[in-house]
Image (cartoon, rainbow, N blue to C red):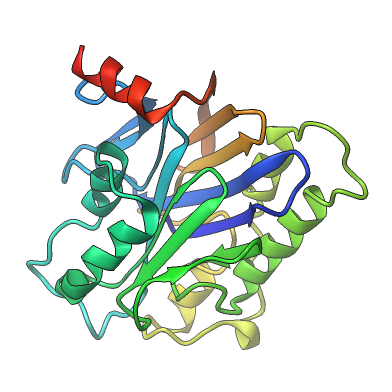
Length: 268
C-alpha cells in the first residue's frame, strides 16, 4: 500500500478502523481480495508476480499491511519481495510484536518499508528507516511512503478524515464502509510548496501527492477498508480500479474464530 490511516483500540465499537490505498503500476498482475486456496483462513489480494500481499486479515482477526518508503537513492536491485513480510505473518503463528522483533535483524536486506502487523486492537510496527520494532499506542495513525505519522499533506488529511468519520461523539453504532471509501477517493493534488522532497522531482511529487493517484502508467489500483468490531465481527471491503475507474467492490463479513479452531480448519 502507499497510503493508510487507522484508528486503533480507541473507539467504543471497534478495535480497529482501517482505510488504505494500494498504488501500483497498472500492468503488474494482481488477484483481487478473496480467501486464499492454499491458506483458507487468510483473506486478501495477491501480487501475482512476487506472490505476497500488501494487505490481509485472517479469520482469527490477525491483520497485516505494508507500504514502501520512497527513497530512489537507496534501491536494492535484488532485494526480496516485501509483500512476503505480510503473508508470512498472516499464515504464521507469531504474536505481532514477536514477529517484528525477530524480523528486525534482517530488515535492512529489503528495500524501504513500513510494516504493521496486528491482532484485533493490538499492533506492532517495523520500518527499516526507523530504529527497532514498536508497539503502537491507541489512537489515530497514518502512513504514506515515509515512516509512521510523518506529516505529509495527504497523510495528515487522511488522519483528520478518519478521526472525523470515527468520532464517537458524532457517530453512534456501526460505521458505513462507504464513508471510508469516499475518504480514499480524494483526487486533488496538494500545493507544490507543501510537498516533501523525496528525490523524484517536483513533477512526480505532485502526481503522487493526492490520496488517490492517477497517472499514465501508475496509480491507485485498490482501496481497502477493514473494520474489526469488539463483538468479533470483521468487515473487509475492497474496491478495485481500472486506470482510475471503479471496476468492482467486494465485501466480506465474518465472525472472528479462535486461533485453535482456525488451525483445525486449515489442516482439514
